[in-house]
Length: 365
Image 1 (cartoon, rainbow, N blue to C red):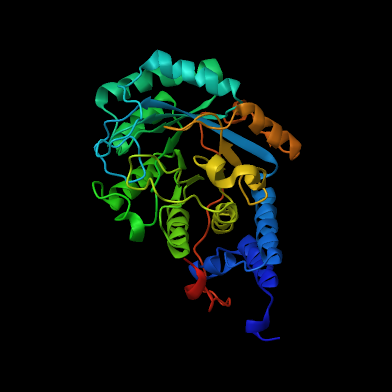
Image 2: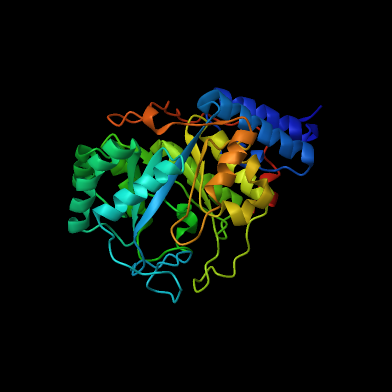
């Protein structure tokens, strides 16, 4: 049988097995997502689930956030309802302060979250806000046992070192999309600045969470481009968000992804970063619908619970019931160990590809 005659399902099974042995190349990753029939799609999910079980087990990590400062953002990200460039109905308010952050942490604990992130709209957190956040981090740890995280915009080594000293061992900063597509999404902040913020958190020894939003007009090749960069930076956790088009933003008329494509994105992330945390976050309800239960089979090892920044999430009861029904376990927050980041095995550099990928350029879009 020639290479061109290999059934797609068999080719995907071979590539999944390859991902368990060595890093996939970009061409191999693109070949994975060509699933023209049900058998090849099932093979992709089966391979992703096998990788997830091998590296992350059957524990589900739940994370939760608080939108600590909303609106008035000077960046022009075309997906964001908090941008001052667009007329939206998103609530606008100043930094909420330590007591409300601590209250939100207790709510996150009640939802079963293990990780809790304070999110601040804008280019970067202000010095006064940073001081407040530093003061509340020890209380979050002592009173809830949660792992404190921050999504604070552009930050440098000095600010991150202060947060690390206060007890924040995790940091979140999305790259949003591939560099080759970024100009279609945001024009007010250079892509390199986002990358440098992620690298700065890595330099500080923090557990770094960085991913993007999918469904913003990017191609499959650009999705691979983003995930390959995250692998090169060696981030620890990859949040998968799907665009939930917000009225008033330039992306308001974008259509949701099909549930099959949404699952393929998760599986792609698992194959490219097999050892890492893969979280499914914003937009899962509208893009996946009844197929949300398939995210773990597609390779996810965690998800966001509760509400998102500007939209409501599905009720925690439904999420807990889904996890229980699938025979999975919620990872307890007390197992984090706040003095050090989780031990995750770095992914080595990719080797030369020998896979069949001729069909990719015609189908990856």
